[in-house]
Length: 537
Image (cartoon, rainbow, N blue to C red):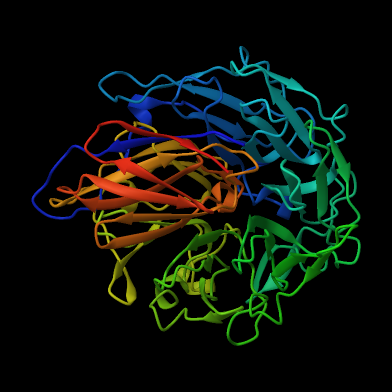
């Protein structure tokens, strides 16, 4: 039996009309931190993917802290400026302020880090960190008060090579969190690959095509936070892995692994029913491997949501420029490409997308789409490549059966940047999801969500990063509305969002229900904040 605590907060502000407003508050809130990923402009593929950001409650005080997985230099990849941890010092008036807690947290990670995943790997009630790196990954165990100890070797969690992300979930259904680790290319800093190739008449950074891909790794948890490396992936071909999520994609009470690859077929890995565990790629037969034209894409970010209102998970992926981002709708046991039918494609063709998320920005009851963008080629221009080096974030607002691109004249949403990783969470406890972004060799930014609706309010439910919850299908019934969400914090490119779900309800509504598996509980919407306890499995 597991006890789950959900914390609910409601937005209080009212405006005359629905409004999407995202504000860069970094100057006031901090942190004052610029990421490192080799040189600028980048000289090789190892320098273009950038850093990772991770939001979780590190010190157990109830608000979301920030970990930044930071890079280094190709000349000295083991001795960079170091990854950083920042404590959220949220004031009573909801004013955000982040302070550096790296030293007090006991974190001394100077190698080239790419991403971080926060989850309770040792079942002690707090979130540990798994940091993927170019070199050797690191498992940092939390003492519950925000101090971390490197237990990588003792826990059997050492994975080498170029890791890009780690997706946790109970893949073998034994009650603890396992880890699927995506890896990219076989990179040697001492003997780097050719620097450039010709692309559309331009000399550009080479790769990943022509470089050796690395096989992904599955770590199975022994139940005490230590791991065995599984041979369940031995039959799978190596690929240029950039992202993965564990999700029950077909509602059979078994997690699958959805893997986004760069310039290769995406994979939908289905676990075997017997022992020993084996993973089988059913991506092609179920329509997940390519887009509707059968083209392999360069998938960076993944977003999960119920786009068509059927209660099944649909997938959006971000891809390279001169291609489009892709929307795959679940129909029975298969995915069907509805990219152009729902307006996703055309606005994204000139962009190169990374982090993406479906979320109800304007609190109108359906989920909009936010994507962070930026090219990998510094010499990209609209004239030479039909795409620019610096690009703005894109919001595609849900309007009926289509997603409609929005334009902004001023502020963060109007600025061109070279964004990469992002993570979402209710940083200021006001009932909507804020955003942390990390730019390639640029600042980490705190983006406060000040969006509003005159007739509706936002609700955030806070969950645990544990084996019971990660990958779970969550159903909220509020009046005549039903909202389907999936707790998959790690879909963001090299990012880890807080284990929260967000939805909106009419302001006059006072009660709702939440269903997880076979358990249903009441939510009292009249309290601010309200708590729902004793949700058990």
